[in-house]
Image 1 (spheres, rainbow, N blue to C red):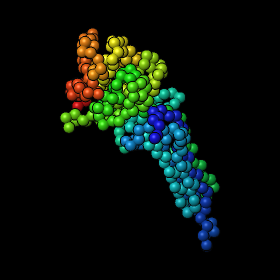
Image 2 (image 1 turned 60 degrees about the vertical axis):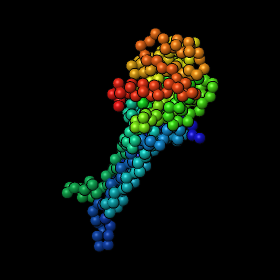
Image 3 (image 1 turned 90 degrees about the vertical axis):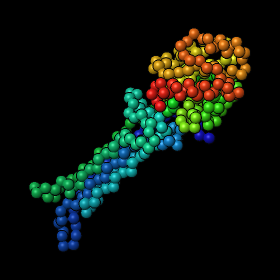
Image 4 (image 1 turned 135 degrees about the vertical axis):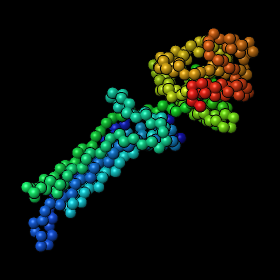
Length: 331
């Protein structure tokens, strides 16, 4: 099974331009023919293309260096050299291409099949035939091709999903994702079962589809890289709606919510501006009084109680998700 990799540093280089050549026409009965040196071919380009079948940067990270082919040299009889073969780098949807040194974002690649040329290949040099004039009919020089360009990049995946599930470790996010969608995430009764973001498609009333993302559990200090930390916070940046999953089997409901809010705020203040709902999980293993305490929490956010095991409260949760999506004009 291929390992999930959501960040990779790579070096890319476009192809050098081919060299123009010095050549003169030499045929029987024409011992002093004119110049016929062809131009060099252009170097290959570096191109990024989005492939929806990819989910990880694993193979890109392994390869690390990507080079396009150099253009071929020209030849006699005014034949131009062939263009170098382009180097196309296939990436998953949601890949951000940045300059490693400065952090400048060059491309944000989200659309399937989208292609972007990052570096053009070097221009091929002119052969001596190009320089022939009425004054200089026998030029004995040609141009070298222009070298290709090289740059070091950082690629990052920011998952594209409509709804993000956030919660502390072992809050029940993966189980909820499994019952709401067709996803089959790894599930276990211990922290950090989820080591990679999981995606699933929720079908609403047989006609609407939403992509949900289960983000690995956040802990205090996640925005500084603690736990699985900042590696996965970026995956909720593109979501439209957030579900804050609160574990009802613990008594610290407000503390759980405050911890999640603080981590999201510390990473990006805009995350707390997204429409959201508080979801009390594991309703099946707590007393009614505990559930009532959660529903009476002092917050202006809507609160729902659900049990993924008994599959109760899920229809109401789906209705609320769709309501929030419509509220932010995403449907």
